[in-house]
Amino acid sequence: MKQLNIVLSIIILILITTCKQEQKDIVKNQEESHVVIHNKSDVFYQYSIWFAFVNKVFDGDLKVSELKTKGDIGLGSFDYLDGELVMLDGVPYRIRENGEISVGQDEDEIVYADATFFNTDGMFQIKEPVDYPSFQQKLNTEMESEHYFYAYRVPVKLDYIKLGGVPKVEKPFTDGLDVLLPIRPVFEAENISGTLVGFYCPEYIGNINAFGHHFHFISDDRKWGGHVMEFKTKHDIEVPWDQKISYSFDLPKNKTFENVKLDNEFQYN
Image (cartoon, rainbow, N blue to C red; front, side, top):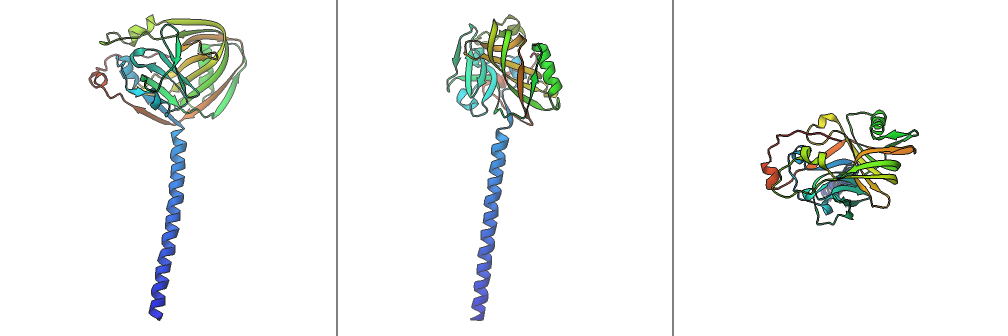
């Protein structure tokens, strides 16, 4: 009888220890899941690489539906350069070379994109007249370090803005961005309100992405948009920023990318 009690005590002790360990594992898994969710929202995501985009990889296989899982703001270009992309509040707008703006459909494909979930880490104000170069310089001054990545979602009221589009191309792709961008379609507007969506990449990013600041614009009425080339304003600007310390990119899975010769180098902002 005494031996039976000892055996029962050992069994009970083992069960209690096992339950405690299982509870610890559950808590650990919950904590790890929380970290994964938090980190996912803080990742700077990129599809394709700048070096490929420069060297005429103009067909992609990233669908709009997939891009929307990577962030609620973004910029880039649609397949075959059939429109600049600016994503705001999770809505991916397509701005074609004739200025027409539509919402990208889930099955539409993208050739190049940056995206992230925007979470404000800090904010500063600009209370003096600025143009685009001085605006970028102010961003450089305010960032904590030039070695991190940054995302911006900036509401603005502008006196003037000059935007660039992209000309649609067809296979075989003969001209690269160094040829296409100088002849890109240009849109100009005065006294317009909208949102600047942009990213900053450190110079060490090399040919993976375009270093420095890169912004696209979409007007509040969704009738004007494109790549920011110039702007001027006398109105105050409140600039929220989001620092990113995680970076992830996916590569196109197609013959164009597999066979591309990465010969040309070209940078622009």
